Amino acid sequence: MKRCWGEGDPLMTSYHDVEWGVPLHGDRELFAKLILDGFQAGLSWRVILNKRARFLEVFDGFDPERVARYDRKKITRLLKDPGIVRNRQKVGAAVSNARAFLEFQEREGALGPFLWGFVGGAPKQNRRRSFRALPARTRESDAMSRALVEHGFRFVGPTICYAFMQAVGMVNDHLVSCFRYPEVLRLASPRPTRSAAPGLRPPDRAKR
Image (tube, rainbow, N blue to C red):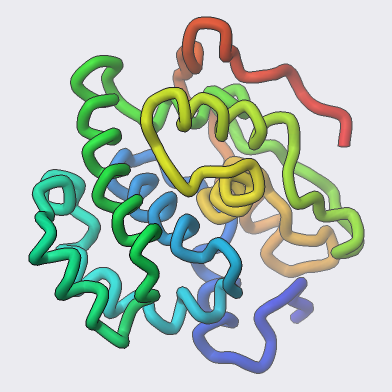
């Protein structure tokens, strides 16, 4: 059984074998992933994965309605918790992103179809043969980043957005030699999409 990554660490192996690249469409699930990828900025995913259980506990399961109500006192408590990434900007962004998420839902509707619109509503099935072929960002992640910033989100740069797209199955970036590549491929199914935003239509298939 060949894996493209994750060997040697039980948490990373489990994440690779079960979660990474599996298509997620629910707003709450996508919001949680986006926040965790924001915390990952400048760090390895291994760090975030080892802290994920504590993140979920102290951030109320990343319930956006609860996180949006966090005040200065709550943020101060979070910044004292060694079980999470204690970065003031990132914690503050998680709170403001929860508010941006709720505002988006109120004005535009569900966030999931909007985000999936950047890949045409169905996972892009890449055929990577080596890690050298994996990009840090793409036209799609650039466009997603611009659109999210336009809607008031923070810590959503193009690189963060591409890591998010990989995690939630918008792209299948398992190497073709990995046992998970065909398994994730079978999970792909088109969903209804809508335009991302005026002037920010998801791009057509990008040549990689």
